[in-house]
Length: 352
Image 1 (cartoon, helix red, strand yellow):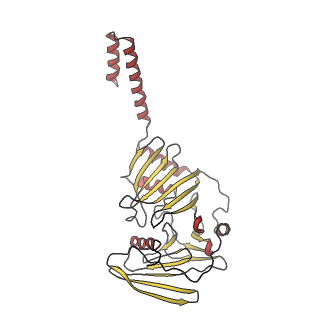
Image 2 (tube, one colour):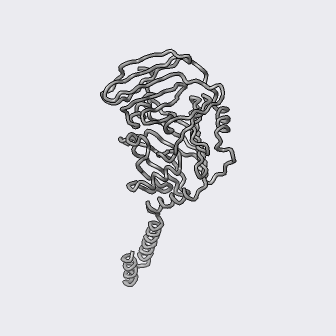
Image 3 (tube, one colour):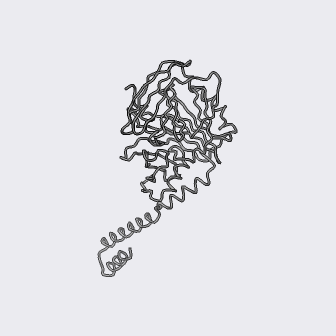
């Protein structure tokens, strides 16, 4: 910069023509503007600190998003509506309108609930959700992942800040990293891409609306009220005793199906698939039962987001309901990562 100024002065002193002086002056001004622009660009630490401060200061938010899952044969798209009010109130409504499927995760003073309106059931967990893992649709969870990852990468575009961080999922070896895009203007989330070890995007969340410091009425996070309103939007599941048996596509190496057993119960058929090998497991399937009156069941384990549905994960099992069928996967040998891998692959297989 100083060399350019000195050059301009020297040229003037040596009597260079007026036209040349004008060009030199314009060049120096342009250089000044570029320098000032660079000085105004925020660093990664500046943005990280601003995000942390925003989460600390905000009272809550409402946001709408679309979540696309690329974990099966065909992409599945869910509408996601997120409400959060400090300190620890949450309402996350996930809906697949094409399949009339809906689930809601609630956190209120009574605990953590997963509502399944099509079955007229709610499941209660003694859990610290959502603090126990990353949540792609929760703003404060994304910010926490950014703040905690000292090796996060960062870049800035005209309108956005883009971070790439490691995830904190219960199955983080399968989904180890994510790309988080934020608006420069208000630091609101724009999109999240969750990738596997080959950088393939398996889950993508696109935010269409984010309103910080939203106001909520007294019953916004009430379990009964939300179940009642959810049942209006999603019809109760029709009862059919027959269903198509699903088989997992991804099983641990050295493990294979050894036996299939069908058991008649008062509610219909129950199918038990037994896999033997280095890491044996059992997969049970049966038609889900619709409760005549709204029921709430205390459930062991933690809420576990499989993408296509929210299940319950314990040390030795993973259970979920999808498309009117209850699934229970149990094993003494499979890790949580392996349980989730097998469970996700079940939905991509229709028949053997």
